[in-house]
Image (cartoon, rainbow, N blue to C red; front, top):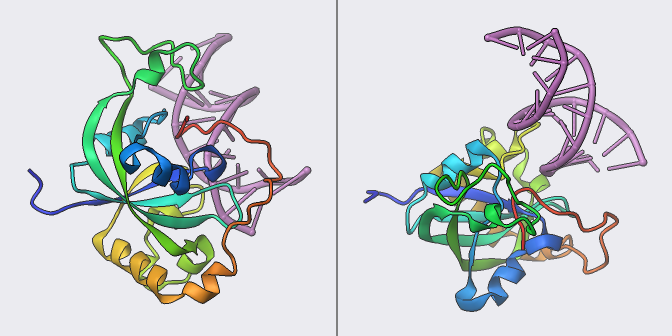
Length: 184
DNA sequence: GCCAACGTTGGC
DNA sequence: GCCAACGTTGGC
């Protein structure tokens, strides 16, 4: 029983599974499958029900925090690793040793205006944020309480401005590619 | 156990 | 499209 909720950030390519997809899911809940990185997996295993999660859209224009989700089920085996047809099939995973795990996330809110990464850079209290570190590729990462609060403040602060930079509905210049962190 | 080669991520 | 940073693989 965690005394306090913890905070996290997950990345997803919106072409693959956006926060709008999450909103359209049954009970606005999904299982966060497809994580195939040990560090990211270990962070998922540390999640507790009630923890809150920044939902980040990566590899799009602009990359942005799109909203907040909440953990509704703690880590359990990721069955997609066992499925040879799945994009994230891992031949090393077995039913007895599934290796990979996932959690269930439920939508909490979609920001009226996504907070682009450019708006996060330069904010002093976010200087240590994992997301902003060069070369950071972790698709699941911890967020400090003050960082979480700051991002929410930014989201509520700048509706007009950020809506001008909201992701376009136009086709991505990139082909839809399968994301290591996410398969749906 | 080292480390070069390789594939991937993801901002720009 | 570019390329830096990172994780993984595999030869030795």
